[in-house]
Image (tube, rainbow, N blue to C red):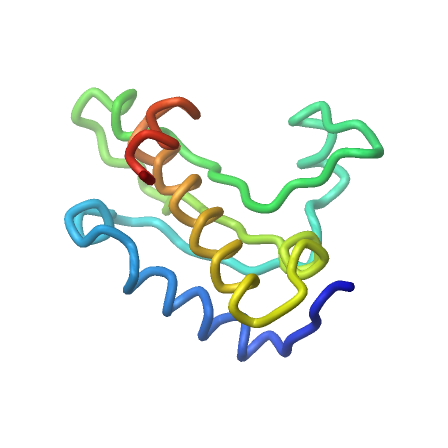
Length: 124
């Protein structure tokens, strides 16, 4: 059974997740917009070559810090959290909070240019 919450509650859960993440990593984030969308767009699904049976919980779009070579982008990078897929994985408010925290941490890791293995190691 999936959970459904208001956008306001979802934004509060995102803020709670940000506060709960390791301080050094979060404090050093610059020029990144954290967005909420119901679902990935068709364009995002095509860009990531997602099959119909695959979903996306979050997405980092931008230039990772490790690839910037000292340049700062004019427009902010974006981390988008997808509400419907995250809710569908959650049976309680607590499990939704954990899904949001995990997904946000994962996308912040991509902002720093980390691969999936390193993100998982740091999350532990």
